[in-house]
Structures are given as structure tokens and as C-alpha cells.
Image (cartoon, rainbow, N blue to C red; front, side):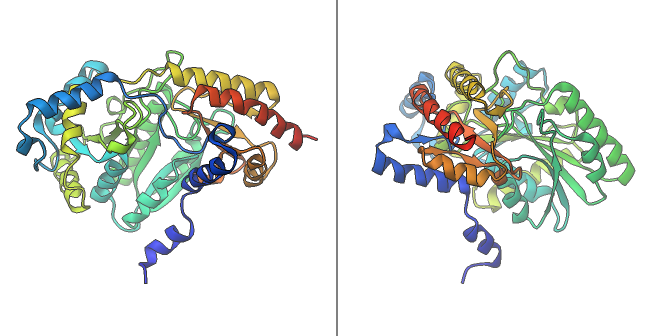
Length: 395
């Protein structure tokens, strides 16, 4: 018999993954070129050439036993220093190697942070729509998720509701900007307001409220949009980062957590998060990939391909009559369903071999998420099918 906690997960497996599997099934029937799978956020832009060159160089020059052996649970010291230096240069911060903990991607980073700070029954606030796994990560440590709705015109947080929902049990707030699934980037003004509300509530309840900034899409922004670096606005901030999107390395599972010295009890928190890295079973981040990202910390993929996809898809859908805001970042488009039941909309879309993820998977029904990290040619082939889909629904 499986654990009680696992029963809901087994019965409600990820819709995103189910859509991905459905895409593979349809491809066998209709051919890959006739299936339009927009379900999974799997990067379609190749890794920069320097990544593969760096891997080869490291394998040829590093001592194999040291390279593939254990190191500190927080990661190689030289790698952490290189990453801290890169962050400081780009965002005018003042970190050193002790402020960086290497992780098995952002998912692991979120888990070790939550394990380190969350007591059973304490609350974590999230802004809906939000990445589906946040709920599961919080439940892993017996926390309670509190949802705050975003404005459905801009998908920016409803800060009045946010302030009202902070309680004496609030332990943390998770923000994700650039956002999955909306593509929205929170402005500096919004970050300042969030920070000010948190400072006021910390004083009111005489406790620490952490801000967790989940940032796998930080480098994927368009039209000269700036993404504020959150530690500059609020001391009790964790930055959770992944190279999955910025370097197209999702399968390599490599990222880091930033813990600033300004955080309350920062030394104890750093030690707790480092130990959490070990006791949840990760032990340490993958050694080879640590060395690789250390050498490529200032590198990103060419996001022009994603921008080209965004513009083609967005302009086409708007022309047909669909409603959505133009994404400022990430590689997702959050489309308003033309009918009330977005799950039914996704079902009808399958008739045209179009696969999308219903917004209810992100705690925001009435919308669907479209991942445009796909080949540009696929979008061109898919657009006429979207037109047929829209015409059928609007008959």
C-alpha cells in the first residue's frame, strides 16, 4: 500500500505530463508534422556551443576522481564564487561563495528552502495562476498553500488581497517572474509594494516572513523589459535559480539558491539549507554540470528564436479573435478560453491535434497555457488549425 500523501498525487498526476504523452500517441497516428503539441516547457533553442566545448575541456583537463567525487553539500567553492561574481557584476549586488548553494535545479532549490523554513500548518502565499508543483512542494513539508488571485487583465498580483491574506501563520511568499504560465514580468513598483507590505506585516506579527523568488526564466525577456533583482528590495529573500531555460539544460538538473547576508539569521539559514540539500537525498548538485555552469555563468541562449515564436503565435491568435496578453518573458502564452469550460476547449482542440494545458492546472480556470518553445515551422502549420478551432467554437 502506498503512503497516504501519495494517493492524491497518483490519482491527480500532472496534466502537463499527460498532454505530453498524448502528443506522442497522436504523432504515431498522424505523423509528427501533423501534431501541434504546445504542452510542455521543454526548451527548443539549442545549448550555446560553449557548453559542449566546456564539457569536453573539463573532462580533458580536470582530475577525474576530484571532478566526479563528493564535495561540500553546498557545491564546489570555486563554482559558487564564479556565480556570485557574475550576479554581482550584472545586478550590483554583493554576494560571495557563502551566499550560493548549488542545487539539483530550481525544483530541488524550492524544496530545500521550504524544508528549512516551514513548520507544519504554516502558510505559504502564492499568486494564481502559478506553477502547478508549488502546491505539492508545500504539502511535502505539511505547509498550507494560500492563493491570491492576479488581475485577469494584466496578471499582476492583487496586492490588496495579498495584504489581507497575510496572517500570523504566514511563513513565506513565492513569486515567479517572468511568470509561468502568463509570461508577465513584475515591475519594480510591484516588487517594492510587495516588499513594503511584507515589512509592515513582519512588524505587525513580530515574526519573519520570507520571500522566495523562483527565477528559471529570468534571462528569457523581450522588448528590453527589466527584471528586478529581488534581494535589493527585501532582505529576507531567497532567490531560486535554474539553468534549465537560460542555457537549455533541463535534463541536467543544475541551479542554485541565493541567501543574502542581510537575511535574518542568515548563517543559520545557510547551514539549514545546506543540510536540507543532503537530507532530502540530493547530497549535492551534479559535479560536472557545476563546473560547466561556473565557466558559463554569464552565458545565455539566443532568445531571438523564442521572441520570433511569440510574435508569430500572438499576432496570429489575436487576428483570429482569441484574447490574451502579450508575454513579456518566459516562453508561455496564457490564452483566454473562448468558452467557459477551458477543459472542454482543450478537448475540442484535440480534434485539430492541438495540445494545450488547461488553466485549472495553474489554479486559474477559464484560460489555457500554450508553450511556444517549439519549432517556428510548427507554429506556422498550427495557426490554420487554430483558425478552424476558433471558427467551430464561434459558429
